[in-house]
Amino acid sequence: MDEAMCPRCKTTKYRNPSMRLMVNTCGHTLCENCVETLFARGSGTCPKCNISLRRNTFRIQQFEDPFVDKEVDIRKRVLKIYNRPEEEFSSLREYNDYLEEVETIIFNLSNNVDVELTKKKVEEYQKTNKSNIQRNRSKLSKDEELVEQLIEEEQTSLQHSRHELVQQERRDKHRKMRQREELLDNLEFSDLPAGLVLASHTARQEEEEEKRPAPATKFSTGIRIGGGTSFLPVPKAVEAALYQYRPGTVDLLGPEPPQITLLEENGYMSHMRDSSQADTAGGYTTKLGCHRALQEAFCGLYFVPDLTAGRVGQEQGMDVG
Image (tube, rainbow, N blue to C red; front, side):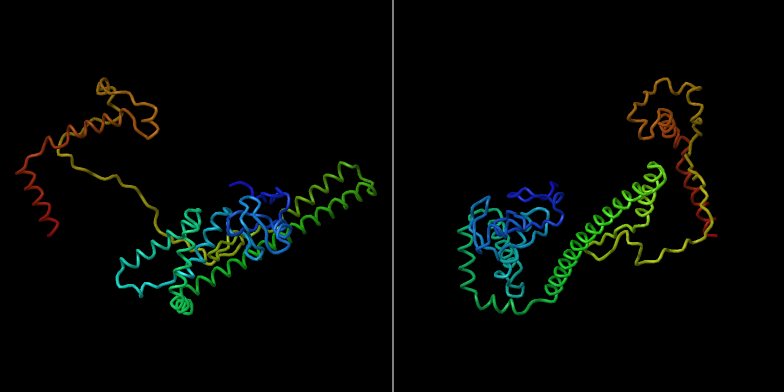
C-alpha cells in the first residue's frame, strides 16, 4: 500500500505524522489543512473531478483506500432509505430481489454508473415510501444498535490511539533534545576524553531504550497483543508417561521380502530408475520404491481361502472366549 499523501499539497504521513486525510462524496481525499483552505467559504470544487462540494460533508478518512470510505458512506445513506425488514415481504424471493436492487443502487453510485438515473430512482422511492421509511427508522433492531455502538467505540479508540501517538512523538522529540544538550554539556565541562564521554552517553541511551515498554497492539476485538497481559492463564503441563513407538505388524500372507539394505547386493536394483532431485526432496528413494514393489509382489502368495477363513474363525473364537 502506498504511503498516505494529500494530492494537492503533496504532504505525506512521513513528513507530517499528525496529518489527517478527509474524504467527500466523490471519493477523493484532501488533508485537513487543504480542506480548511479551499472550503473556507463553506463550498467549493474538488481539485480532481471539479464536483461541487460542501465543507460540512467532509469526514475523516477511516480506511486506507478512499474508495472504501466512499462506498461505506453511500451504503449508509442508501440503507437509511431502503430499510424495509424481511417481515414486510410475502416470500424470501421477493426479499432477495429487494436486496439485489439495493446492492445495484450502491454499486452504481459507488462506481459512477448511471448516477443521475439512479439518484432519480432513489428520490422517487423516498417520496413514495416516506411514511414507511420513517416508521422503520424509529424501530432499529437490537443488532443494529449494537453495531452502531461498536462502531462508535472503535472510532473513539482510533482517535485516542492517534492522540497517544502524537503525544509519544512529542515526548521522544523532547527526550532526544534533552539527551543532546546533556551530551554537549558533558563534552564541554567533563575532564574525561571525548571518546569515553560518547561511549558513556551511548550506553545510557541503550539502557533507556531497553527499559521502555513495548507498545501494546489492540485489535478491534479488544484483545491486546504485546501488552504483557493475558486473558487466559497458562495451562499446567500434564505429567504422563512418554510415548513409545511400537512398529505395527502386518501379516502379508506371503514370503518375507528381502531387507531394504540388501536389495542392491541381491541384484534387485539393476532395473530400477534412478530417483530425480525432485523425488528425493519429498523423501523418496529408489530403494524404497523397489522394496514396496517387492512387498506387493510377495503379498498373498501363501493365501489359501479355506485355510485362511478357518484361521480367522479360530482367532475370532479365541477373542470371544
